[in-house]
Picture 1 (cartoon, rainbow, N blue to C red):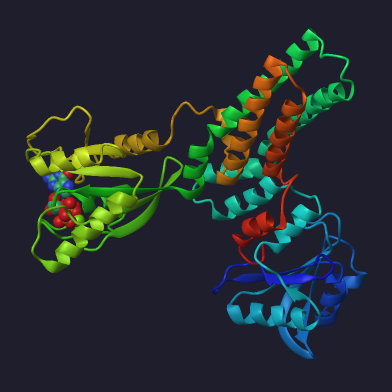
Picture 2: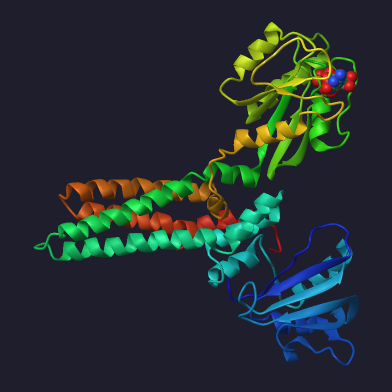
Length: 451
Ligand SMILES: Nc1nc2c(ncn2[C@@H]2O[C@H](COP(=O)(O)OP(=O)(O)OP(=O)(O)O)[C@@H](O)[C@H]2O)c(=O)[nH]1
Ligand SMILES: [Mg+2]
């Protein structure tokens, strides 16, 4: 599979100023040579060009001119895939890009699978698996904070920690195994104490990394926050306030919002999908009733509930019941219409007024605090783990904890040796030191084509 040369459009579908077609593989320059006609005294055919140079010319398909392009020649190993790479920049728009792609496919390239360029970068040792995943995180990042975390992971900050952990485990394992080979000698008490101390340090670091999993997920996927409450409480006004646009219809008529409205906003670096819902009440109107059914569905699916209360009215029994029903969820109570004479005082509620934006910043702080534990250390941001890392590290932790137990009681060395091996392998999975084709297929299939 690595022998052939792959090609894909690397820029998004749709119209744009420019589009880039990317080729990678041993035949990249030869294939590009088939369909590229250099124009002008400074342009060369790809096979004669120096690496990392740019050439003006035309892409042709079986003799017919397709588009005017700039062709970049990037020779191995100083490329993303560590293979010879050609990047053809043509005019934007689907037709031009598709025609250029067709021409290079006709000249012998194979259409790339999703993520195949990054997969080659991994297989050729340019990046490890955690870094490959960071490429995907980088593309999908929806906030500055998520982007910063992805960049750090791509730079190898997580990988360094993981590699260090794995090295520590392997060295301890080597030590233990050496004593299995010489059964007459026990591990000297001093040495054993050192080994235990090292393993305890590894365990502590694994725990630190595991503690970043929730925030890691929040950063990558964002959270769903349902805005709920009685009709007319100001839910849609609050949505508009949080988004900074007039997204939802606001009227003084209770029961304005029927369908649920979803919009994403960046709240203190966290991507939050807000869901404005139909006001909760008994309704005989079939359309509104369906809206209310959807509100309940949104509540069930949301991780965070923003319960909007109308501060100019008393809290009703229904309000109270709804607050209690969401007790097990993360819930923020909002006392809206703070500009009007207040009918209730709730110690936990955030006071807002959607007419002038009062309380908006407090609310954003509260949202961040609800999903971000706060005690996360700044130096852990670059190593936020994802669900796959979490699974591997949990298995590593379990095996390591067992190894520590058996080593402390000191009855046998075979068992802890086995557990240390399991722990080292599981740790290695994070960076792809131990990985299966299936795992790679799963990871890279989530990428886009051309990356
Ligand atoms: N005085 C005052 N009025 C507000 C405030 N927030 C919203 N309103 C008004 O309250 C009315 C209802 O606002 P909406 O945002 O449509 O309320 P809702 O909760 O989405 O209502 P439904 O969609 O019907 O459930 C509108 O007339 C708003 O202008 C506020 O902070 N103060
Ligand atoms: Mg509404």
